[in-house]
Image 1 (cartoon, rainbow, N blue to C red):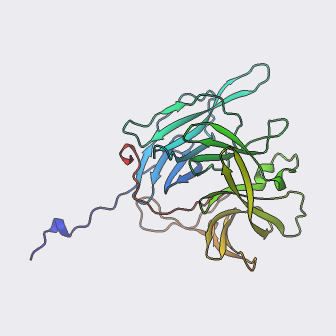
Image 2 (cartoon, one colour):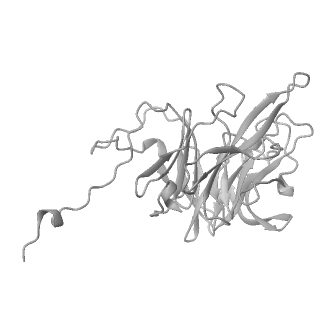
Length: 316
């Protein structure tokens, strides 16, 4: 039996578009259900790296602060409709007497037959999220760390946005972190992760000496209706702030700025797994690996599981 040439040929491997010249920097990455959101200095992109599917979200003219592109952004799935929502802070008018800038939130729903469009939700955003820390999405809600530097008294905690009813709520920090000092960088002393399907917060007390291993605690947020409780899950002994990435058998993968480490939960030993600044990459359209980056000041790592979920209006 003969087979035609058309039958022998494998389907072409899809390629992501070439983004050369479209943006200069990426502010943050968010992820949900193996879809990744990239917020850049010009556009916001939603893509599935597995099937190399991508959609560029439309522009919005609601932000009243010109030139400010690094706005807090989040991304998650609405469990009621099954569609995905991108949520982004916007800055409104400024009070001439107080200098206070009103804040709101705009939402872009992806997955409906209609093209994605930004819309402003009703009500003011009660707190400003920290734009430099990626939002986390779990169980139909998006969470940010509150930027409390311009509030008196300082409101340390998390801002939660419910993707179903599109309402805000404030989540207080665990009691062990409630006595942080007045340092403007207090928000850097804890991180958010999603571990085993739970929102996790990892932090340490700033008043502990630097010459010994700090006591770092991983809490999980337990919510029941209107109440929320932080439950301590793990205690780590490390020298600097860390960001848990994922649980592995008997170990916890941690990110320390430019390196990944494995922390043995029984022996409490820490082992290097990867030096991120030594990683090599393949340039678009090239089969050769490029040399390691020469100047890397910040690295970010997110967990990812391959998925065939498409992006765009055809995903519903």
